[in-house]
Image 1 (cartoon, helix red, strand yellow):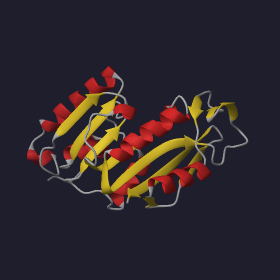
Image 2 (image 1 turned 45 degrees about the vertical axis):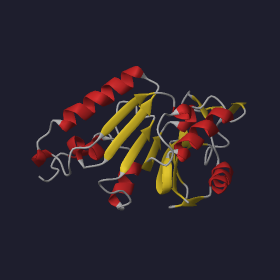
Image 3 (image 1 turned 90 degrees about the vertical axis):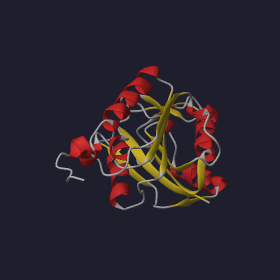
Image 4 (image 1 turned 135 degrees about the vertical axis):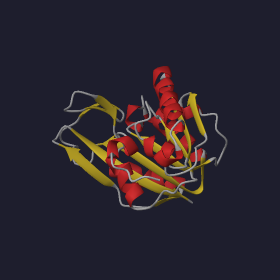
Length: 213
């Protein structure tokens, strides 16, 4: 294995807070990983190069096509250009709330900038419950999602938990109380406290990291 001289080449456009978990050693090659709402695969480059069993779902046919191309390109690299064996990959065109994977199929489920696109609370819970269903006991759930934390006085309520943000977008927003309540109902264990970054009073992004009991 050669040294990763080009970080962009090795890690792509990975979420910096997901990268933080890699640095903390929470993930290991050989784990079976699901990126729920994988988009074009921006968070998967390192995992595809490093011996993880990588799967993803997305409702966008274009996104799934791009991710399959990315996986194919990385699979063609020589052993000197990877840090683990070739991965097993599966990318499916399907909604997160109705995935076709088996129960307890994954060691790690990623949900990066996805849950805040829920139409309403029913869909939000449906997506979350489905991701939790396919996660193994002892598995890790990593989510980054928009919230009202630190922004409650700057967002405009539309209906239910949908808000208009100062950045011009409309999003489904959680708060700390909701995340605490849902974690308890799932019988999840916090691996880290809830952490939120406020982006110049335009939006707040929260990291939610759990282990399944």
